[in-house]
Image (cartoon, rainbow, N blue to C red; front, side, top):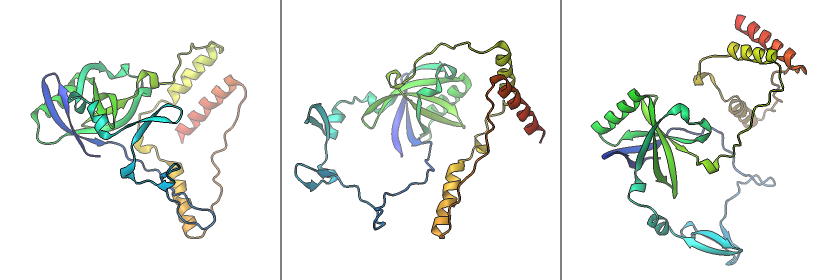
Length: 253
């Protein structure tokens, strides 16, 4: 993705290029016909005309009643956009701690599409303020609110879910545990507290999958993966105490 847009910061217009910040490393599989091992095709088929349909012959339709549709073209969608929608309009600045991570969707990196004093000024102002900007923009026929923040020496933009998209209900905490169990839980949290080091987090399943593919290609058998045996302790207090002891042993190694 290489999408040109602009940040609207008060009366300042900052042209930027938006690129995706995340790549998906998941191994992809094709759908194969079990009988002959041929790759299956994805066919767009019209049951009314009984023909395959080309992409150029497709419109988007909204079903307003049973089997009745109104169709929309790209021109129709473009009519719903204003000039402001094509930019990232900043509407406020907030503390990042006020935003629960559940609201974050996709991540993008914003870079200047040419040497820009305004971009550099905005980037430094974000860094020094410790605040994040809340903005709104429009992508792929959808309006988004976004967070624009300083991170990794870049300006990063995260699209946000709307409040009505979050399926969360606030629940009151039930105190069905003892004060002693609570103190032990706090000790366990303290014992397990560490720095956030994402470089140490490896996708173990994908690595096992790559190894399995290599074995399949070379005609070898896949052996069943056996993870660590998890000890089960029924009593909560005993489980907390055992966990704390185990953590202590692991740190001594």
